[in-house]
Image (tube, rainbow, N blue to C red):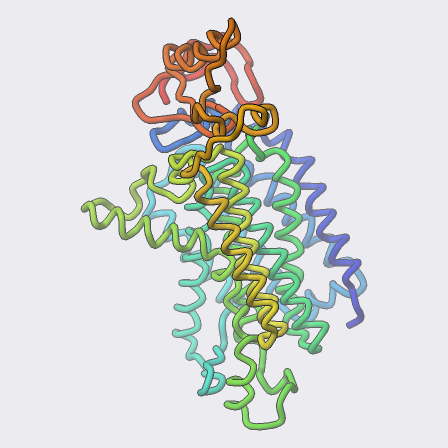
Length: 457
């Protein structure tokens, strides 16, 4: 194969364009079909918002695979491997299950069973883990049963991790896009840098996944005009897991030709190269941690692990005092740091500068995370250049002499009287349990509402 980076970019652009263009009509269809559930206790948006965004994302996936199958270099992936067809089969099943859940609701155990069936369909068509490299031991071949169980487990964990993190506008699609970008860099290097054609399908999957997320993000950024729903979150989770499964177990340590010793020595010496083989779990460390904490939290309370609550990481960021947009950007930052840090470490694990940069950026991330906890008093002359929360009066505007002070002081009182919770540095209204919305005019309002808005938060 040649160097088809331009063909991958073309596939990415076509996928993004199709997803973007389909999202508008899909939004109108979702509104007409009534796929706009009422505001739930754990939601943070204020208006009923249509779901089914996964329909547009699945259309982008199909378009990307169709275009790639007709390109000079990338089409060899379809000729030499059955993995693209396996991905399409599993994606179709998980997408259909998500559409049913977005419209009518599906029991959590049924969704779990559907996820396992979708993973099993991919395994039956060859998209499975054949062996895993173990440092100090070598490549450990897996029996068909072991490979199937490990593949299904990876798919289910990744799908649910993405589904759990889909709680703020643009959060899941942005984090998965970051994950796909890091995975594309790694897979392309493994394929073109080391000549491992077994990494070509994973490179294609990462490019298509980036296109799906990039095309949907403009419609999903705060304030979101449409949600991807389970039809989208489970779909992109499955595609991300498929990329990891495609490259894991297909890479032979001896094929890397980095060392001339035994296979055990090669595996042990190339540990940094193998670290990103679990890149989906690495780049999704934040949502995976959220998933584990949610299971522990709910079982500790004697509840089912599938019972929804408001204890996720993004909920806690809002409670700390971050605005909606800032909470999303913080999650982006940590995802990018972990993802690209893992890729950089796999390229050159001996570089001290890489470690120092990761440590410095981690410290910066902690400062940004804890900023709402610190409200230093700024001098009065700097009030025009800083957010209100850093003025001596806290989050509300500091009282000044004259009529302007009365108007400033009255703003929070008016907000409280209207039932709107003011939070975040920008003073935007965030939903809180037990509160009610102020009366809204009937008719089409804002970017998402159709008809009268719900008064229950």
